[in-house]
Amino acid sequence: MKILKNIVVYGILGIAAFLSLFPFYFMFVSGTNTNIQILSVPPKFTIGTELMNNLAILTQKVDLLTSIWNTLFVSTVYTVLALLLFSAAGYALAKFRFKGKNLIFTCIMGSMMIPSLVMYVPLFEMMIKINMTDSHWAVILPLLANAFGIFLMRQNMLNFPTALLEAGRIDGVGEISMFFRIVLPNIKPALGALVIYMFTSMWNNFMWPLIILGSEEKYTLPIALAMLDGNPTNKNYAVILLATAIATLPILIIFLVFQKQFVAGVMGGAVKE
Amino acid sequence: MNKRTIVTRKSAPYFFITPVCVVFAVFMVYPILRSLYLSFFELVSGSYEFVGFQNYIKLFRDEVFYKSLFNTVIFLVVQVPIMIGGALLLAVAIEQKFIRGRSFFRTTIFLPSVTALVAYALVFKVLLNSDHGLINYVIELFGGEAVDWFYKEWPARFAIIISITWRWLGYNMIILLAGIQAIPSDVLEAADIDGATFWNKLCHVIIPMVKPVIIFCTITSTIGTLQLFDEPYILTEGGPVNATITLGMYLYNNGFRYLKFGYAPAIGYVMTVIIALLSIVQFKLTKEEDA
Image 1 (spheres, each protein chain N blue to C red):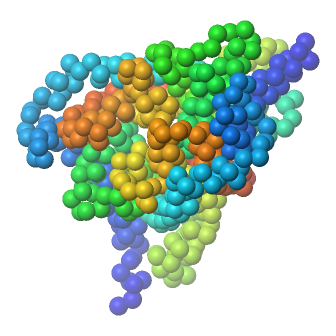
Image 2: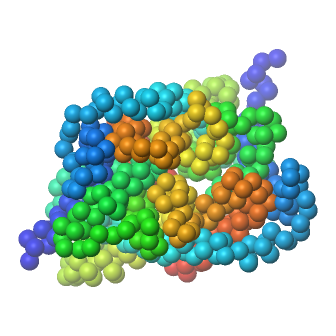
């Protein structure tokens, strides 16, 4: 009876793990096969020899290197700005008493309930007015109004020992340098979670860049992928999946290295050893 | 004057919070209000014309809007329970005492949720290909009949449901796992001593104790599903004949394909009201649990 239970539980987990991994495997392997091999019945899902060939076709079709650079730029700038803004805001909300604090916090949390789609028309209109459509800053700036990131920072700052701050004040450390020299270095795990969360959310973002970016040399990876797929002339799935694999690989590596921070980001920042 | 004397303990919080407040005022509060304002106008040959409640009236007579609402509701009531149920099952399975390689299972099952929505949607587009896709091949292998995934109404909906479930199941599993781990071990041990069976423990200890986490997952999944855009855009383009068009896609089409800068915000506001109502209902459920 017990053995049967073990087999069932392992079976469920094994199937789930297999189903989770297989699409990744298929994606990576397909980049090394031809379109015909992928679309034959049954499809070929062993490693083939067409990688270089597909890569050559891909580089002809889209400027993937530029898209990678664009995505890297947008994601990095976004993450750095978010880190500064959100940790400062979280610090203020968790460790100070001031007028309007509750109102600000309520507004920020309440904004989580509003679908971001509601804001896209006015934001688009705004970007036209200030002549900033088709720019990377237009992608970055509006998405800095992210309530979850601030919430994440506030939750982690709540646990920061107030005694440490008091000791700093007695020693005559200024409020600004206290934040940079005492607070930030001591919440590195939480900052790690925020970095991962912000970076991947921007790396994977689709709808807003799709709206605001118009020219190919500005495209981020998801847009470049969608355009590659949307082009109806001689659709080559080997090439599309190769591009998908290239776009996914960096995030997979980051995930495998920083697993703990990923999970902490998902769980609202409860970073524990 | 030295900077230290400007930023005192009293002024410091304002110094730290102001940048975020400015960002929120410009990129959140203003667009929300402007959107409401615009929903009473329509863009006619380059300039706004006041139309009163016309956009909303039109919306309530718009068949495509109802279709997108219907599809979104289908995704919601079919996909969210399957996903949360599956996530709970896997979380409970991973937490079984005898399981080895726990972190392997946790990592692999979570892995799909780090991929870009566009990227995984493209992979599923190939896997679900009607004539040549691997999924149909497997179905036929087991004696089933190949499914025309993208050109028939319900199969197209299920193609999207399958894809979203793959992407988000592990994500919810991780959250539920944290909830299960937070159950004090003596509670479970007490149940063991009382001779509780696995199902007893699941129904009378685990589920009631992680109910707030389940509700949290349900709320976030609901909000996510109501805004669904990337997957139908890539997988089905809303087709066939709007069978998979979502509220998010319909808003996008109106705003950025047909440039209806008044109608699109009106759709957005109806969406907001729906999200608010659903959230209130779900919060009420949590509250009752506390009382």
